[in-house]
Length: 220
Image (cartoon, rainbow, N blue to C red; front, top):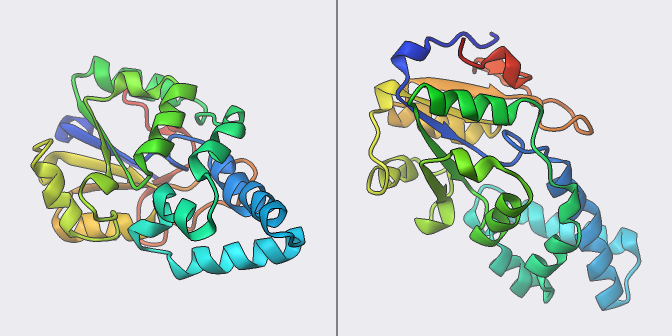
């Protein structure tokens, strides 16, 4: 079902970053192509072999905080992952109408909170390359709590730094596991962002309400 929101019932908006607010092409290119290239050069491997090794390592960590942790990958691959990300930071961009959407939320007096699984170093690069940071009341990295959004405990941990009423809260995310743990916790309004990048396949929202572009959900 496409999104239908009653904005009068929403006081707090929790927003994911990568894929939801930002085009996921940057991350896809970095992890699937650029990082394997650096790994191949360092270890005297073919690009194909390096891709196979890194993709396998990534799959093994899926759903854990390590999957998102630049410190973990720097150690595991013996590469300066944060520095390598900076080399391709020019690819970072917001989805169309994201800034208009964020500005409208602030105009309406909503509390706007980023909740991202991204590592703080990754978050810093993305805030440097976009204007999104200006519109948030709070920027939360799951690494602050040592829990990914796939773990239901994170939603109560967030209350310790940014109290919110789950019944009057909207979470927008492209991660179905995160949406499900939020639902189990009691967050009332849930939306799946299905259009993560023009270069990548759309997400199958499964049981969740969803939208493709922000102009579909900007409050009137």
